[in-house]
Amino acid sequence: MDASIDGVKVAGTPNGPVPVVLLAVAGSDDLLPIFVGFDEAVAIRRGLDAEDIGRPLTHDLLLDVMEELGGRVERVVVSELREGTYIADLHIATPRDSVVVDARPSDSLALAARTNAPIEVSEEVFEDGRELPEEFEELRDLREVVEDA
Image (cartoon, rainbow, N blue to C red; front, top):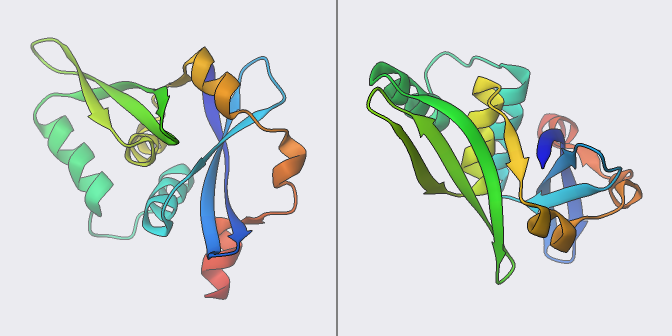
């Protein structure tokens, strides 16, 4: 199922604030929330905003190395939900062939945000994790939280 990053927000939990990436899936009003760490959320947001801070951070460096070696991100697939943890596959085209690399969804989404690579979600994963958009309307955008810090 084709997906896109609908937003990067922050949810209040009993253990404190937790960032959540909201994936919108084509043909559905529901969202797939993927909870990530703050550093990963900021990396995704920076990718979406095309924010250049001068020196490359980890995701920028990985992308630079991949491109210098002739590779490019073809697509990201959130492929599985295993014991409450999302699993993603990073599809990379190389000069020799295409490869699939196991990756955290947060890292994969950060790379997709920087390259505009397509994002996909398996139907089973979406059905298992989908939530109504109203569940996230009151959450603050990550940018607001970072600015207030």
